[in-house]
Length: 86
Image (tube, rainbow, N blue to C red; front, side, top):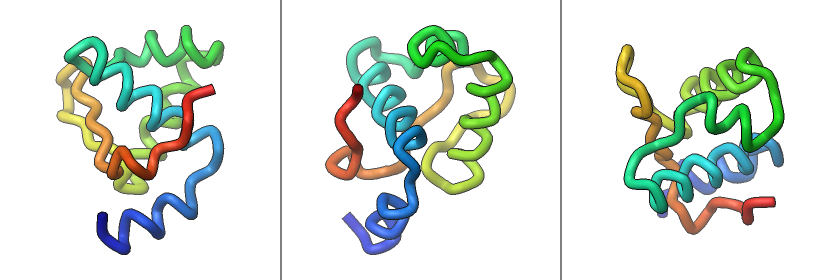
């Protein structure tokens, strides 16, 4: 765990933390990352809301994605820093 990750954890909103935790555990349980439609269903939000959150998390350096590859979201934050999923 490096200082950069500690700083990111402090700056996370509750919603960002929930998305990161969901992505991490979904991937761990299913062996692949969630589709945006999976996140839409879980969080009961619109497709544009999920997409904007994914873009924000990527811009903040908390996740990475492979362009034009489905289910390629990877959480870059140390799992120890993730919040509990509500």
